[in-house]
Amino acid sequence: MNCLVLDAMGVIFKSADDVAELLVPFISENVDAPEDEIIQSAYIEASLGNISPDEFWSQVNMPRELEDDYLSLHSLNAGVFELLAFARASKIPVWCLSNDVGRWSSKLRNNLGIEGYLAGSVISGDVDVRKPDRKIYELFIERSGYEARDLLFLDDREKNVIAAREIGIESILFEPEKGFKQAIDWLSERAH
Image (tube, rainbow, N blue to C red; front, side):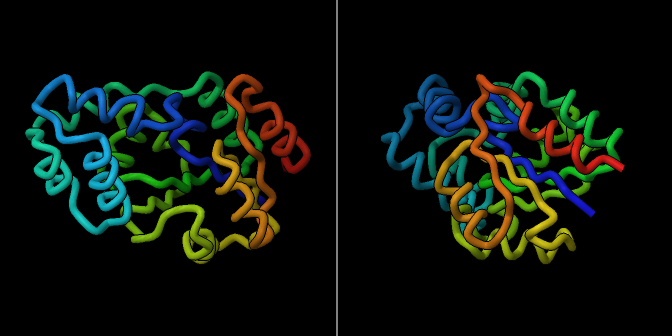
């Protein structure tokens, strides 16, 4: 049995660096924001599960009530629904493996309509470890029930692709301008 594994930011979602591209400007536009480094640091802590999303908003001087406004800035990469539909038609499950704040990731997957296409997800904020740490890939394999050799992983960061390959996961460095052709070709080869 094969399984397609997608990173969220930069693969499923258009913004590759959502902190720099969306979060920092959003906070700066709405409140007297702390320095970018403080926002980045608080985000890393939240994406490791060390602080809650509510604690994150408190640390960056933002009302928690604006969380959904921030999340509404995200959009899907072109071709994501086509890829997910093709995987479903091919009877190949799709999982999400991402560095993110657990609550935010869940809301985004639901709000943008992709949660129903996913067999599951492993999000750094929920498991207390971030890519490219080897532990998150091992945890993914354990939770998903797949062998490394049965997976194709798409990520837009080379260090994450390299780390996945080091434990035997076939991996592709995703480039938005090239779209999902390589993943669709892989699915086509494995379709039932």
